[in-house]
Image (cartoon, rainbow, N blue to C red; front, side, top):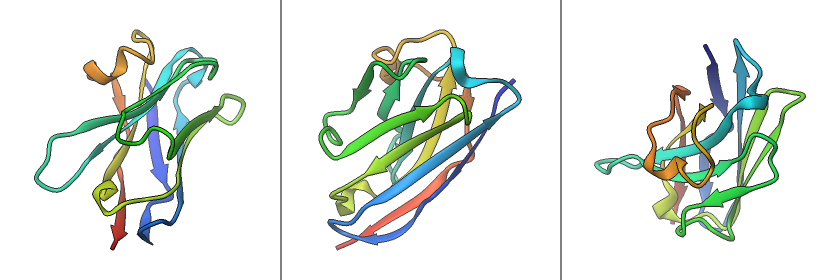
Amino acid sequence: QVQLVESGGGLVQAGGSLRLSCVASGSTLITYTVGWFRQAPWKEREFVAASSWSGSTTYYADSVKGRFTISRDNAKNTLYLQMNSLKPEDTAVYYCVADAHVTDRAMPAAYPDYWGQGTHVTVSS
């Protein structure tokens, strides 16, 4: 069983940056593919980014490619999402996820086994 706790959300102006963190407990993340999803008000939850267990491969939604970077520190059991050049349409609740049975490229179509409680990101115009 994996517990995930996100932090780092907040209010930022368009063009700004935020760094989300997600700390895992209950199990080491080293064997899990990890990622981020988000859900904007009145919209369906959508995939943002994923990282293989080693961090050697990553996968991004087209809407964030070139602006967001996912990374992980397995020694700290933590994953990150660096978000640059933020836009108002990035406003959402961001969830970190983990799953031991999917690859990073398969994560967009999967429903990962473990989810955090979410952290709010608001980007003002």
